Image (cartoon, rainbow, N blue to C red):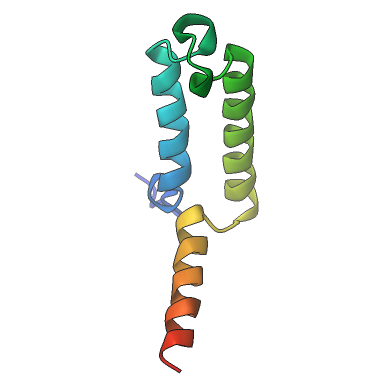
Length: 85
């Protein structure tokens, strides 16, 4: 078996988790049309969000962009360095 060059599921864990959560919400019928809870959003809105999430993840993978975790780590590292100066 060839060796992985990048472990997408590990590197982009948070992005994948957001997509899984959106799919779970849809699977559980968490849409405004069924629940009448505005926080659930309309089906079309949820589908649009899901399409955007997937497109953003694909873009990040194809172009080697940093993950949300990478960006957060950088922010916290910079802030902690500023605190210790």
